[in-house]
Image 1 (cartoon, one colour):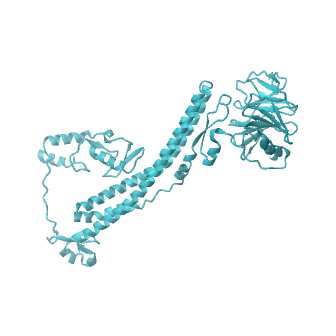
Image 2 (cartoon, rainbow, N blue to C red):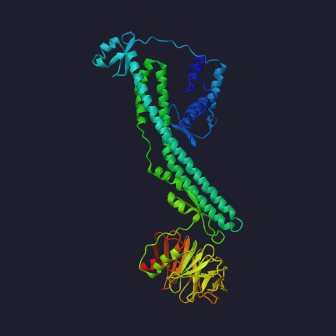
Image 3 (cartoon, rainbow, N blue to C red):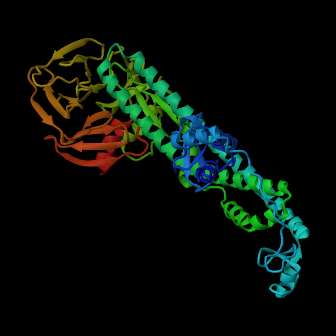
Length: 540
């Protein structure tokens, strides 16, 4: 009784892949058990098709997927200790000697004669009596077993050839997308390294502000990476699974042909053929989202901020843009876009001034008598007239300038002071009394009455002073939660405050700080936006 029980039990401790007693039995995610070595062989076969961050294999029994990280093997799976223990006990009793299987004659159960014919319509191997009786209407579909087997083997070879071509085209597609995925990740890594370098070079002076900027940019890169990888994986992972299935079917078909077992070929052909043909209908993936992500790979870049990192704590921006635009915007340089010529004298003057520039400008601002004040990156200052005359002013150490009605130039100095220069370059410092603002002013403008307006963008307010200094004559909070990246500040004739944002938008605030309107500016740039902003407000 015990011997029969052990013999029956031994039939349940054989691996479904190698049909041998389990060696180091391991669970797949579906809880089916196989030898560790057999699972590793499945992994090696799948790795030949798919080289990605993870590898998927299907259970040979239930076809459910088990995912492995790249480089992992079956030793990372959970062991089936119960099966391993049973196998060890059975081996101890030496009950796994391969039993001798009695070979039975392949004879018809109804007529007792050899089955030598194959009915293609019924997919059965039959004897001559069955061919005359039960299958008499299938005359043209009954063939000799050997002849039918050769025919099916030929069809198997044809399907294997089709499957091989399919695998080659899909393997090339998978390789191309995999390379693009790696290239995109490399670009993102380079951006990450550029951000880190820009951050490190300025760490000593503005550590706290740079830390916040860095984390924001890193989060943006992570978001871009996640979007990029998810979109491409949505194409590559299903493709890898389908390719793995086709490869399994091809190997099974090759094994059928190599076996030379005519009956085995005939009995398995229909199911094998349906399975393979269904999978071969899976064409090359066509994902608009994936193609869009791939088209953006070459334009991935990190654009370093061109302004002084000390004056304006910006690390740069992570951008997706066209390749030709990438070349123009390299190193964060400003681009002078052509301005549509209108009939306004100020615009005609702006177009004339662009032809007279003697260097790379930092900013332009209106000057009395229809002239333009130009501040160059090398800190030179020039006054351009409509007749082509150029007045030079002594170099000024400032990023933003404004002009008073009498021709004097006002620049930002310390947190609570401005400098006023005459045309001979002589400087006068004017200090203000500020009690409730710890922020630094970043922009300056003047009105027709020679009042000085100083903008504190982070505090979202501006202060109005007299050129004589002292207490501010007005402290006006702006009705806007986020001013974003301010490029320039100006005042309209009505006293409205005009802010030009870096993304090409003008925001107009009343003298009391109320947001009046938002106006988009096409092709706005930091050099000419002050002039264009005033025109946009006038046109609106």
